[in-house]
Image (cartoon, rainbow, N blue to C red; front, side, top):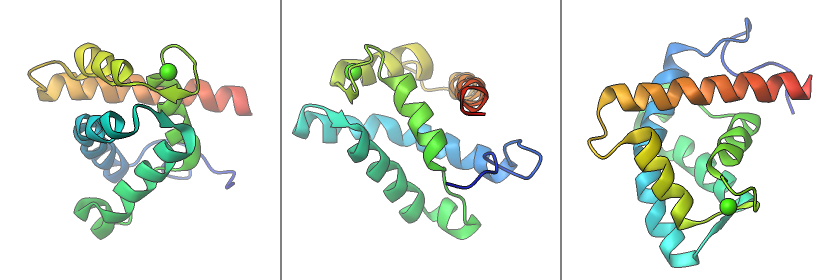
Length: 128
Ligand SMILES: [Ca+2]
């Protein structure tokens, strides 16, 4: 795994990453269909979905943006409210209600993103 932090060399998140993460947040509700099919998502399946999203999303493709594994794992831990190591449908429901909101307005998404960034920093602090 690379030693650099997410984003640019100063450890921050680039504007392109910020935008890409927002697209991924918009994509999260569509993961519910996958969960309904498999009943839960394990860590590896979630990482595969994240990687697949950043590989195939048009914005991410054209701007060469990816979410590194550490950030994806942080997001997984954040979503895995009960710490079971799997993401259950209820946890996605709670994420939507708590973070994205039923209106899915831009402010709610920004709040969710700000929280993710905070969690990411905390996760980095633990790894260092
Ligand atoms: Ca769980």
